Amino acid sequence: KQEVTQIPAALSVPEGENLVLNCSFTDSAIYNLQWFRQDPGKGLTSLLLIQSSQREQTSGRLNASLDKSSGRSTLYIAASQPGDSATYLCAVLVYNQGGKLIFGQGTELSVKP
Amino acid sequence: EAQVTQNPRYLITVTGKKLTVTCSQNMNHEYMSWYRQDPGLGLRQIYYSMNVEVTDKGDVPEGYKVSRKEKRNFPLILESPSPNQTSLYFCASSLSLWAQETQYFGPGTRLLVL
Image (tube, rainbow over all chains, first blue to last red):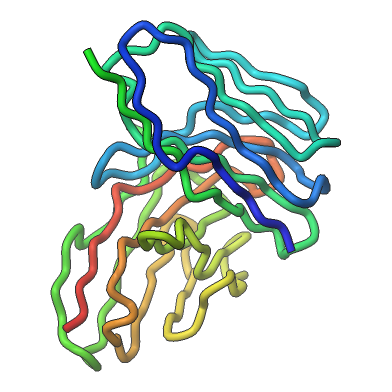
């Protein structure tokens, strides 16, 4: 059964720092991997989607990588800003479990001015 | 504006009183899904629907029902709510589960069952 883990659970950094959020998954038979952002009390907003055949995707200051063989993905945030403070969730879409999106528990990021 | 809407946004109810949380999307999406989010447990899928009249169980379907009579709507029904169904609920949709497109999430419904 696919499991998705995100470490650390919480991260606090000063403004301007580059940072990396980690996501690992146990079964490499994924269709894609998605990164979402969740602000407190709000819904999820999609950041990046990486297809299983791709190695990375970029959007502005965000870069997500995928290494299926090792079961890992990273979300790199460049030049962090206080507005980046939120919880970041990764999720994998799997073939062999009824076509469901399986989420990690998220990393709560705080960027201090 | 492309969006997923949920109603109500907040609900306090009592054990056993049937309730329905509505979900509607205006993007002509085939795939829709319900999740619940609980501290320490993360987001877990309750039910999903690949298209009209096609629904299937997710990881935690017990105590919930769904229907998909129209493409745009996917209501979540709690026939006899219990306190362990107190949670934050999200509806999501995408063009197709296998279309390599992201899922769009609604704003959430916070439910408290007394």
